[in-house]
Structure formats: C-alpha cells, structure tokens
Image (cartoon, rainbow, N blue to C red; front, top):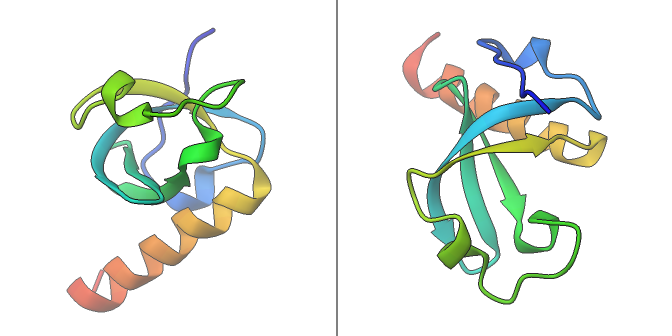
Length: 90
C-alpha cells in the first residue's frame, strides 16, 4: 500500500492513506505532519488495528508512517491549518 502526498489541507480526503511523520507525543496521542506543512492530532487509540499500550515506542518522533485519515480526524488537520494561517498570515 502506497501513501499519498499532499501539500494543502483541502486535498485531504476521508478514508485515504497518507505519508506522515510523527512530530511530537503527548499524553493522549501524537501530532503528525503530512507533507511537511499539514499537522493534526492522532489519538493513541488510532495507532494500529489493535490497541498499543505504548505507541510512542513503535512510532518515535521523526518516524515516517502511513496514516488513514477518518472523517473525524480530518477536522483536527483543518483546525491546525486554520491556526497556522492565523498565526503566520498565510
């Protein structure tokens, strides 16, 4: 399975698989980057088909992976893009 590359949040489609990189971890999950510009939060429960008790050990910061973006996570990426645009005037 090949992941898609995107550069704008409008290109994200629910159910598609994208190439991503783990940017940071917090208690509830990870912030991942798609295409180097689009960032969004992925909850711990969304890493893998079955529950991983310590997903940050399998997917450390900087790890490239493929993620399937369900519609409920799509909003996380869109909100992140809106904050970035407001902050940096893009």
